[in-house]
Each structure stands twice: as C-alpha cells, then as structure tokens.
Image 1 (cartoon, rainbow, N blue to C red):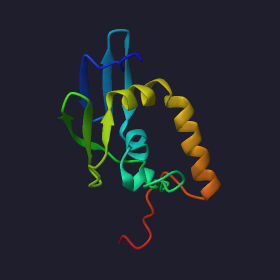
Image 2 (image 1 turned 45 degrees about the vertical axis):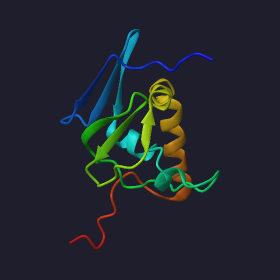
Image 3 (image 1 turned 30 degrees about the vertical axis):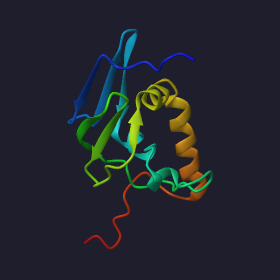
Image 4 (image 1 turned 180 degrees about the horizontal axis):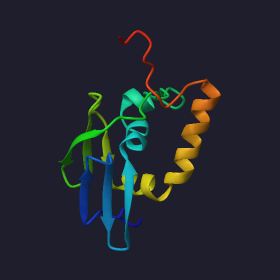
Length: 125
C-alpha cells in the first residue's frame, strides 16, 4: 500500500481564505468554506453512514489557524468556532485532487435540501 503524499509546505492565506498545500509535483489551494463543509469531524460526518449534517451558511467562513497533529494530520481552526476533526494527509490530498467533484456534489446537496451557502441573517439584528 502506497503512503499518502505529505505536503512539503503549507501556507495559510487569511486574506483569500485559502489553505495552500505544496507537494513535490504541484500545489493546491483549498478554500476555507470547502474545508469547513468537508470537515472530518463527527459534527459534519456524523457517527455512522448517512448520519452526517449538511453544512450551510459557510460561504464567508475563514481559517484562523492550523496546527500539526503528530506526523499524520492537521487541525484546522475556523473563525466560526469549529475546530474539531483531524484532516489526515491522505484526506487532504484526496480533497485537493478531487476538489471539483466534491464541490459539485456539495452544491447539489444544498440545492436538493433547499439550503444555501449564504448565512441566514434572519433574527441576527
């Protein structure tokens, strides 16, 4: 079994709200929203198949920090308070290389649920 690629460098771009993963053969920039809605946490994925929760209203979420978790994963801290779930090197590489497919599926799930990427501002004033 081949080992998952590990980035040579990781750059957090707070202004553009992206996380850049730099590998030997290229780099990927993953948007904070994309990473947040695909968090490997139990809050997002649930505790079993089909128990996940569709994340909505995350269009403007940002990343406030990134921490190494041993030699196998990253902990990403989002400005909406979410900081659970460890993004393994394998999962990050999968998200990077399958970005378009996962993003389109997420957008379709929003449509199917009648939800939106925008935050619901009703009752926030």
